[in-house]
Length: 632
Image (cartoon, rainbow, N blue to C red; front, side):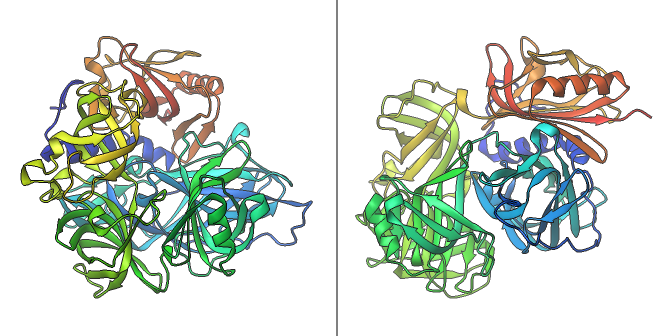
């Protein structure tokens, strides 16, 4: 039986069951939105890049890739090509090189993948080709990372998959000189898959789809990677050749990274800030590796970096690098269970076994956002997400990374849990996940000043400083971003830099009707919203809202749920077999939905995400997708 809107699940069962029912709740929607995708076949190669571009005949397209939260620890597939098409059928290639992409690593960020120069015009369709041959996909089973095979509905392993994305007139890509256009591709893993943990190997039944928009509905951190071209210190910016996803040779357009007085730099393990950091970057040779993190100004199409890494602070030929969360520590030995290994030759691989990381007194420790090299190896504790730089001794699933003469960078770590108590300066959480991993896999022995003070995941103490905790109440879900307390110094167990309370957490609504669908999915449809008919006899088992670790059964609520349009950047979609219509505005979306239902179409599934207000039972959505079954 599914829990009520006030239920709290034990950690041992809720993780997999919650994700299983939610993925199933939108499976019908996925099958529609896949368009041409879902099959395994060979096709003609993509067209060559546009030729003969000049400053007046071509413009720049920025393409970012991201992912919504899902069930996967890793999901690495090859992105073969990305094309855009005009209404007259003219096709241009915007991603001319094959890229291996781990979409599971893009949950909390967007990767800028190309700054393509293409002919002027209005583009109304995008097509992306994925190749699953040699894909590496991992999920968590009983606390351990295990391999999963991605299959279609018939159980056949996927091969080459083409996905067609159709844009409406208000969502078309306009290319013109002088101002870059933007297209964000969201590969929603949770919405695209149903993970079956009972098979051996584990199978992920896939109907992959990608939603495309010219105005992202969520502001995520943007990651920009590539070798240095030049630095202009008077203008506080530098220029790179864009090279995403650890690609060794790609040149996907030049891109400008702006910096500010607060931008934190780490170059060859040495930290600096603002103008001093940019001056240090100016002293590096052209071709020096760089990575920048920050927020894209969508309106201006400009990017300012919060933090910049350069030189051998970026994975490269000097070190092997392990990325992941520390699950245990004993003395100078760290354990990372389920981490990514980036070799000196730039091969990238997810390691399903335990990785042993050896550190010592000479291991240099730095931190995202700066720390001015005042940190020591004791700063690395259980739960902390890290980049460890050293020498890897093996290539199997039980490798050892010797970082005694290397370095470790502490990354912002993400907690999700339910509030136990909240007071000024401290919030205690019943942890649901640390960077998506269940708390049961972490051994917190040694984290406290005494054994009695070791971190307790059921009552995890987060120091919040001057951050507001007014919106946090007992049993409400919350997210925290920050850093784990140094090993042996808890409590508190964690220092929060950002706290997101229940009212601001993204809510996800999944509703499924019978296979035949329903002609009356809503009590009313209009400018103020869609009111879901929770008493519809065609309602299936899927009728829930997920907010972090909490799920709400909409049939148990005092009044029907209203899905209302958000103010600002929004995206709405109607899908049917072989076709999806995308809308940026609510009125034409609702009008088209009414036309379809009046013409005999039936609703099979709905997925919406936004902010949920329990008092009014209203989900204010910035994204809504509805799957329709055509008559006949």
